Length: 168
Image (cartoon, rainbow, N blue to C red; front, top):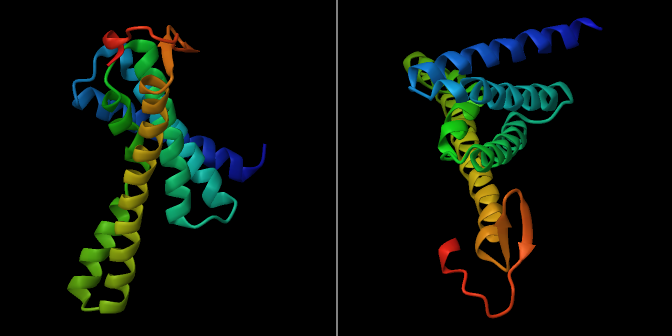
């Protein structure tokens, strides 16, 4: 195992522990703490792999957010819980906190160029989070409300003329 992989494993483990602790603070039910930490660790891992492969911070955040949203929706259906239980915790490793800090830092320094750069980057990251949630919500919603209905974890076509009012 090379040094870079070891560093990524340490960072992902740290993300898991941080999200697990944050989920405790959010009063996440105890039986879902490990899963919330896993979603956060998965999002952090995808982000780090994207950065490692030379992708932009904004695009890496988008890919990470897509993964977090998919896993959150899957867990929500498996455990019959709200998606936000896993979604909020999952986004924490990639929230642009450093960017927000840098905005304030450069404002206080009077460096308008760097303030603008980090402001735009932070807004882009927040925007791709919202876009990723919207895309994945739409995909899962279309399976539920379209011509497909959920039967346990399998999706089947609705029968013609059937009254599926209970699925709405």
